[in-house]
Image (cartoon, rainbow over all chains, first blue to last red; front, side):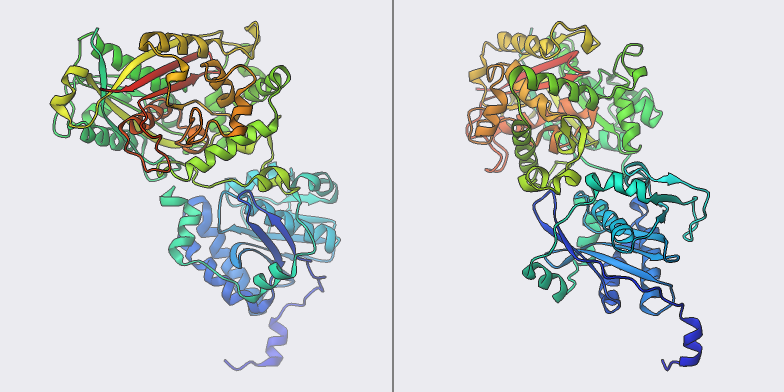
Length: 229
Length: 396
């Protein structure tokens, strides 16, 4: 489709410069190594292939989270969202989890979504923690606004950190935002933010070479549990 | 009194079964056991249903009455048995006594629970309702909390270490990967849950000194057995009957604080002693055991209290591999509560089902104790205040 670049310049939101998120590696409970790294815009089509089967899983609000994440990633890919970023979790090259968020301004971050494609390994917790690490340690923000769609998310973010309730609306809608402040982050960091840097060349090359994704049935099985459990 | 045999068993995969109601699960497990017993198109004299939380979690009572109708087993006698997490073994005991006495010839016992319908903390609260209503519950005690305190005391008195607890976690989750009925079919890695800095997130403290992977999951599931007099077993099935050679039950104080020594699980020792006396066997005669490892410490403590190991030796034995397949006394080859899961009303029945499969020699090689002839179960109610032990024997 041809672009009217003059109009496009109006439609594209301005972007706040973001420093890169330095990749790290985490050993999971099953001994596998998960590389967490920042996605680039060109990764989006491959990421969406893993998100797509999750659109049809009602369990634990995967359908809502996936549908919204799909739209957010598409908006980032096609320049329709301001200052969005996306971090990926990969094991053996396979995409096992995705988190994203954006900057409201230089000092305030807005957490979007956390999607764990492999479950039972606290992948969501690790990725959410990486997202908070990015906002606080690398982008040096003062606070991040967070909401949860699922009870699991509420337990993992609002209770485990614990986040501070506010009356500030979140742009995803739903309940009012909770807030991660620097003080909360510094207290939570030793027990929730882990990982080793730098990532070995071998692991990094494997992750960057290709975003592998399992077939739809396998993804559904991983999320809904083995044999529907 | 007549010798009583188990002639049919059935189980459905444990886990999170969103699509099934409690009654669905009870019915599926029952039908499997009835088919296994050769009673597919026949009725039974009585049905005992083990369930702890139907009233609280599903707002449903008179579950046994509902089940006999659903299974077209009318006009069989029917009762629901509630005895906390020991409901399953209590229901089997009730069936055993009914058949042994000569009053009934065929009895179906089924245990089931649907716990994943509620959030984890509500499930924890539901289980905590078995604590003392004035002396414990109002102060916020939970079963993991009790287990944490018990573990700390056991560590101080008997030298149990986190290495010992870890050995149980790793073994039982590994066993779970070989059990198609297990809720958790994921092997754990020592580095991932213990040795690496990342373990602080992967395996966080749940109730100090217990960590996440020291606890069983919250599960849905059901299991069933069919009992009849040993002398009638051949009338129904060609499968090897498994005899309930011994059973014992004992109770202890409701509150842990009232026990002279909270690390002494008297009810476990007494229940096991009674079962061994009835079966005319001793701990060294047992080929395989299913113990109630709702927390890793309990497998260690129970293995000592039933007499497999001396006090303070259970954890060391686990580290040495003596409780693995091929070891001195294989324990929880099903994965135990730790990996098979712990739908509270189903657990005591599921333990017996797994031992029956062992004694019939029906399991795959990687889970089957070679030539197993005797097996033992411990179903642990409350925090050891109501315990049942069964000793099963392969019929000659």
